[in-house]
Image (cartoon, rainbow, N blue to C red; front, top):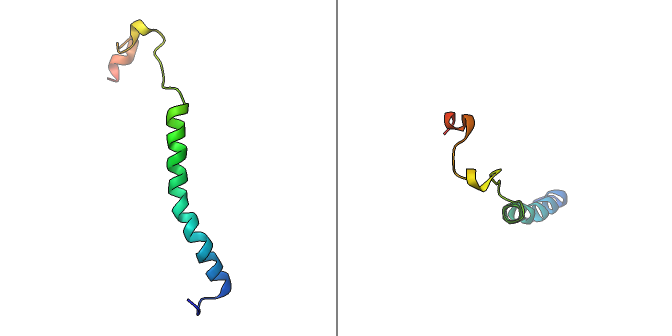
Length: 59
């Protein structure tokens, strides 16, 4: 490692931990969005789970 220049060494020392933390951060954000953003709801509970209009064309 002593043959690596100072700038490259600094980049490797700082980039490697950052690269490890990025997937963890993305997973955390995904988990928060999953629990914070409400699931789409039907316009009426009576229509929940029932195909209406032209929806049958895409089922």
